[in-house]
Image (cartoon, rainbow, N blue to C red; front, side):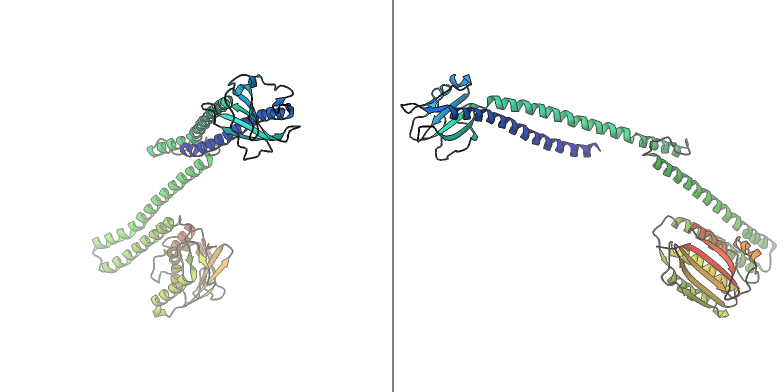
Length: 437
């Protein structure tokens, strides 16, 4: 921050100082020339010609320095082919005159014709009454005083801008130190949380930092919830696997004749439990990807073909209809996990007809799966979402399908509802998910 401020302030001060220097030099020089021009006008107004052709002034010029040799203030009246008429202050020197350039207006310039004494000269051509000659009037003054004034003002400007620049940089340093101090407190609070000394960041911060602290505390809450959910899932998985493992152990100790069938049955149950928790873990892990999008129709067609092949022995017919452009705001794997379970259940427990409909309702996406099975009584519908709950034990399965669908749908921000199918007479499952814009 200091480097950026210095890179911005220093050039601005240099540019401002240069501009101010130009203004000061121009103003002092203009004032200096104005005084010389005043003396030149007085000379021209009082100049006359004597009988012998010499120039004289009808009234004396006001500044005594014109009469003091080498005083630094001089005048001279010249004409082509004539000897110039100098002021006494010039003594044995003469001002240089270029008659090839007529000056009908006052003309000011700097001259170095006198060694060691730079001059500022103002000159103008004029005709004296009773004379046909065009005379060149010149007033010159040493620039020593002008240069001293400019140097003094430059020193003041340089010191002033230097002090201003240092003061601004010090102010920015103090502002940065004070402004970033709350962030150092946040850093120390986070270090204390990591070491176990704190659980949350205190909230007594300035308004500029308070939103950051609130977000970080919410992030800590979220991480705790995730850790607690992970512990709960691990416990649930351990509990779910404990029962089939006990069954297998008991069957093996007892030397049961159908041990192989029991192993297949219980390992299938354990596999479904593992799949269930892996599906939840994947959905939780992908929830942070807010940019994920999945087209619904291609997934439905792929699932239609796969489930039709799985239940080919029962000649299951799966029809899909609705919005072909609908898009799910989430991962394709999650969508296929949910819809695949619904279509598989409908094909397994229905009479052979499955009807899937896709609708878009504002920012929500609805996927309805209907079958022509016996349906489910309203009092039993909620129980189907419990892990391991099955109403038809005569069909193979573990009772985890709808539980997986509900868990993944809730993680994705959606929901699942059960009702009776008006068209096919069986069960109608409505999966509501967030739609992509």
